[in-house]
Length: 158
Image (cartoon, rainbow, N blue to C red; front, top):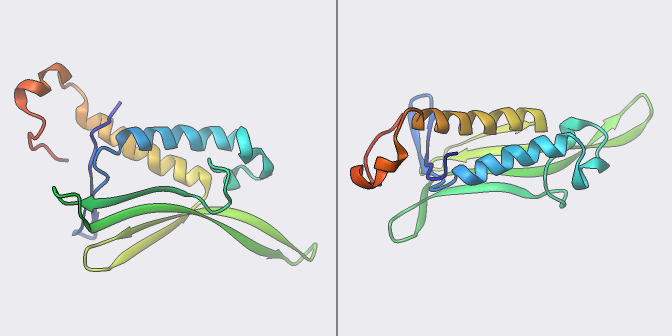
């Protein structure tokens, strides 16, 4: 399982920055939590549509927020975050409001340029699992016991 993961954000060949130092464990845990919520476990059972089910008890929780940090711990550069939002949608047939929940995944570059995706819980599960699978793929075939010999700062990116 990847623990020491840093994400390199790019859009159309433009770098948004490096974020999420040591975020592998959090992403793997989130993927598991989204899958459990979709099955109706915990507080998510209140939502009838599985696409509206996310982990967390609050209606507008933040699921993650990764920022670039300098060696001195200062935040700057890129950012990747995911916040839940509850959205009322008018249903003209029955003439009533229906509440939906969506994950807003936003990436911000150091320049202030941003991108946003609005995802159902199913789409968020696929997105987070792909991040975790790619990180695990980068580690595939490596002898993790040799990390101390090669050094934790060995540059190897994908």
